Every structure is written in C-alpha cells, then in structure tokens.
Image 1 (cartoon, rainbow, N blue to C red):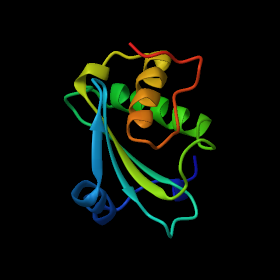
Image 2: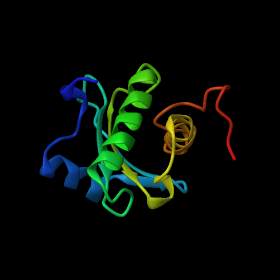
Image 3: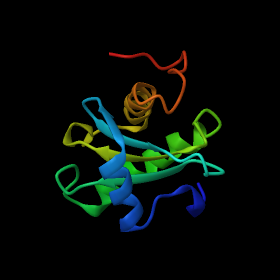
Length: 122
C-alpha cells in the first residue's frame, strides 16, 4: 500500500477523530469521514502499547491490517478517510483472525459493502 493511501499527519488524524463517525467490534474501532474530493481512500492505523507491549507485536498487527486493506482496496469506498484503532482483544490474533474481524468492522462502518462469503461472523 502506497503512502498516498495513508493518513499520516496529526492534523488529518484529529480531523477524522473529531468529525468522523465511529463503529466498533471487539477487536477494532473504525472512525470514518467522507471526503468527496479524494481520488482514493486513505487509512490511518493505530496500535497502542496496551495491545502489544513490544514493537514487534505492534508492527506485526499493523502489517496484517495493511495486508487486509491492500487485498480489499478495490471494495473500499474511494471517497473516505478512515482510522483503524486496534483494541487489546486483538493482541494475539493471527492473520486469519485479523482479516475476519477487520472485514466485519469495515462492513459495520459501511466502508465495504458487505463481508465476503469466505469470511463469517461470530
């Protein structure tokens, strides 16, 4: 995923936090704000120290999240900025669980239309 697809600046993060709508499941919180002027979506990822006490664990989760976003980027609404905040429940997730829970949260936020058939909810 290219850097142009990322929410990077503190100002942009705060704008999405303050004016965005939020939805959550047990593993992720999604903040979303519509941006009609965008050519493509932008995503910000936050994994706090409560989730993983080591940088290795936090970076692994961020890698998994970026991989899922990259796989699903054609399904994501292009005129939206959104943030993915990871909750401590996701601490020991493998790639399959990250994918399942993240797609569920994105579907709740209406960032993707619906969950793919191969991923089922709990």
